[in-house]
Image 1 (cartoon, one colour):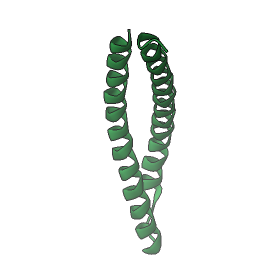
Image 2 (cartoon, one colour; image 1 turned 30 degrees about the horizontal axis):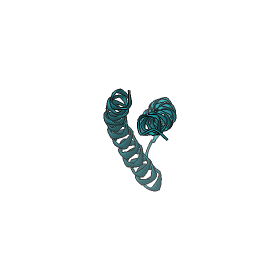
Image 3 (cartoon, helix red, strand yellow; image 1 turned 180 degrees about the horizontal axis):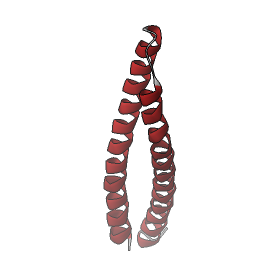
Image 4 (cartoon, helix red, strand yellow; image 1 turned 45 degrees about the vertical axis):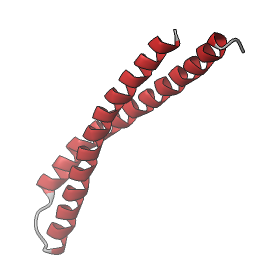
Length: 92
């Protein structure tokens, strides 16, 4: 049973890493857009298109944050199950 849980935990971690890569790309894009917005503001130029892109990124970032939180919860549960089953298997 603990081997099965370990496989599930490993799969969850691999999946979470993919989500974290997406998170990293989205936050990098957000920082680039914020920098571009500040440059445009300093030069007195129109920032509407940059603001629209930033607003479009916001729900994506919220969704990814939510997914990461779910992964963290699942990881914690699987780690607890793994400890429990290993203790049972070792007779403790």
